[in-house]
Image (cartoon, rainbow, N blue to C red):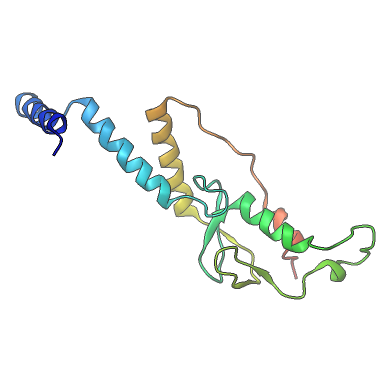
Length: 154
C-alpha cells in the first residue's frame, strides 16, 4: 500500500473518531468514484454519453437516447432513397423492420420511454452538477409524434 494513502487513511480515521463525522473531502472522493462507475452503467451505447431522454426497444430491451435511436431509424428509413423520386409512403418504408443498433433484432413496435432510467440519470446529472459546479445540459424535448414517420398509427 502506498505510504501516503495509508497515512491519509489513518488521519481520516482519527478525524472520524474525534468528531464522529467524516471530513467532507472523504465523502466527495468516494462520490466521484461512485459517479464515474455509475456514469458508465447509464451510458448510451450510441453516443457514449449519459442517457438523455432514454428509450427502450420493446423487442430486445436495449436502451438508447431518444435522439440516438431516432437518428438510427432515420438512417434506415432514408438509406438509398432519392426524395425526388419518392411519391408514396409504401415506397420508402423498409421491407424489413427497423433493427436494434446493438443486437440487430427486428423492431416493429414503437420504443417506450425508460422512466426509471430517466429518473436515475437525472439524479446522476444533479450529483455531477454539484461535484463539478457545472450547469446541466438540457435537451429540447421530442414529442410522441416523432415516431409517426417510422411507426404510423393504424
